[in-house]
Figure 1 (cartoon, rainbow, N blue to C red):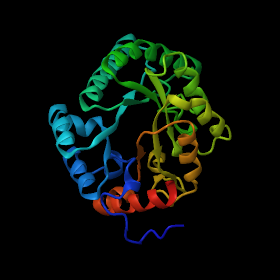
Figure 2: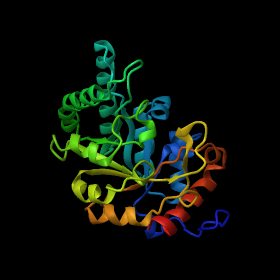
Figure 3: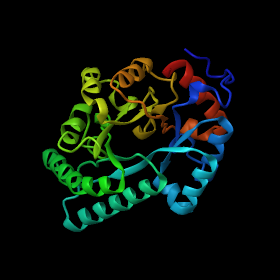
Figure 4: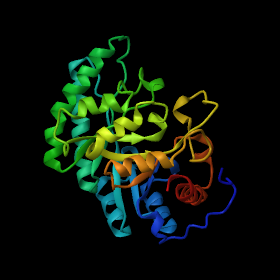
Length: 287
């Protein structure tokens, strides 16, 4: 395993970083401006932006910051949460997703990542929740296509099925996505969420050009009390990354590779050091 304390030897401009993207959650205490500056210092050419910090500074300013820095926006996170039963709540969710599509288009993001939502409070109707997701995607897909943004369905690890995503496998996400043109709806391959699935290699091959985003981070043990924070720096957990990178490459994916980490210890570190470690682990373990 890579020495977690070893300094990074990956200099800005290193061609091995050409596809690397910092998902903003990895440096959670940085706003958009700080994350953009951090990417420039580290020589990371792309950034995945989250909507909450985007709203803190406004879309127009964020667009200027990214463009002036010469960065690509690899994705906008996140839309989704489409399982509401109440008609008014459903309308609010659809309206918010249309705003997210507009934001992604303004940023030049190729995709809007969708975390589709869990069971509504008090509901045990999993099939109904999944059907409502499909209906909502059908309503949003033409709007996204007209904006030049692809909806990217992200299956989440099954432990999040009840509260965050009723899509738990890549196969489920593809079953839904394949009802739409490939340029309208794709899928996210996130190592944290799919590493455990014995069918994942077959489903990555099946996904092919449906792969809209590839995200990497590790699956750490023990799982913390807040399971959302179990995502770790590559090399700190149980996932073998190179086979995933090789599989998505073989499927035809040529886009950015985002590092997206939710982890209290990582968030507490100096963000510049996090980026240095991230670059080294990416080169050593993903490439």
